[in-house]
Image 1 (spheres, rainbow, N blue to C red):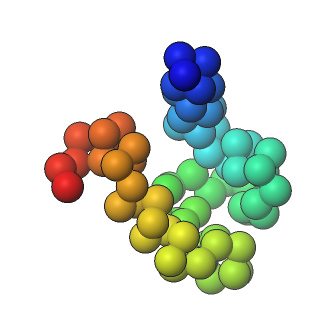
Image 2 (image 1 turned 120 degrees about the vertical axis):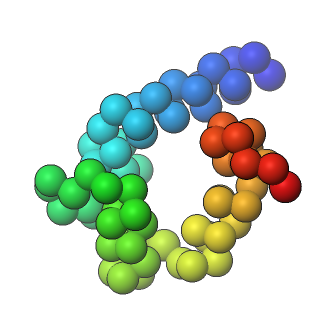
Image 3 (image 1 turned 120 degrees about the horizontal axis):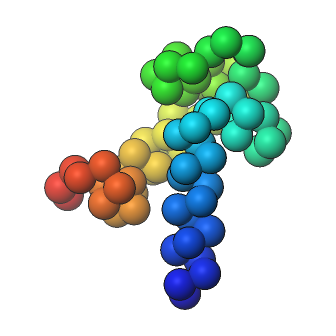
Length: 72
């Protein structure tokens, strides 16, 4: 279990430090120079690379809420 938590933490740090590179490594196509998370999410939605349902599920997940201090 501890390995999984460390892996998730490492992925989060990679995402925070270079979101475009991280997303590209996960097979998402994001234009170079785009760094704003809202713009990235909107681009992924507009190009059909993710669905609104997938975005909603991720932002409403307990893990997201824990990482960003939001209450359920």
